Image (cartoon, rainbow, N blue to C red; front, side):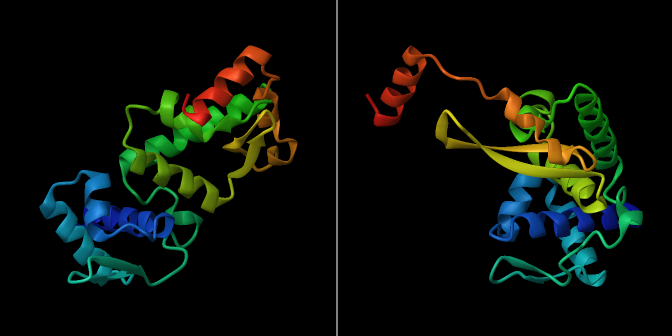
Length: 184
């Protein structure tokens, strides 16, 4: 059970790094854990010196910029996150073989739509931290208001294969998008 508390504390620390604007209450809501698990994870994370907790201010403050420590902790956030880490890495490698990158939107809205977003973020952050994958952002050249994040193996990130997804839009589609933006 102590190992599971350590995993949950590490998850809290990584999410606090990714979302410093989230309060303790927001972290609890996003994770959907039972209150007892959350309280114990906050206590354990404080004891592990991952973060400090101010219950009155409802804040969590990281002690270290890199709560994962070294690569040896890549899979230290529990079985669920470890499985996601493996599956995400496999999907990105498979896409790269086809000279494609995977967008954050593909993960969120399609491939991992039934997985808690917090777990997906933890797995992606672990892969980024480990140096196994890289990420880049790209503006849609046909819609300046749309920005996409893509993931690739580090060895392929320079190719920016995500640009292949952008296709010229028809005049009718451009007009429809313009009307939607103008609220007509």
